[in-house]
Length: 146
Picture (cartoon, one colour):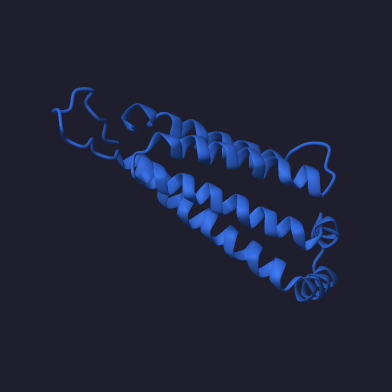
């Protein structure tokens, strides 16, 4: 991985590290797809429930009943939170430090939203791990952001 030197000539823009670029691209893909799917599910909620119920009859999927009981507002709110996460990644791609803070806030909200809307007692372990890992890796690039 490429590392930045601490001293860049005055008046020049720092180079974006490869790790930051890769993280941003992964966030663009993940948040973009989740934002789109949240909007589609919220917009076509009745059809989604009908298809998911048929799917649940054919395959035994743990937790599908919890998803089917969730109101469309959850998917809309989730899509908005993913849009915020995407906005944070765009700002970080432009080497703006505020993007890290925006991204982190929306990742925390994405962890808390299912707890609120689905009345869960704790956040999901995979969500905690992936969000925490991305926040940690993004934070390693804060020194080059302005």
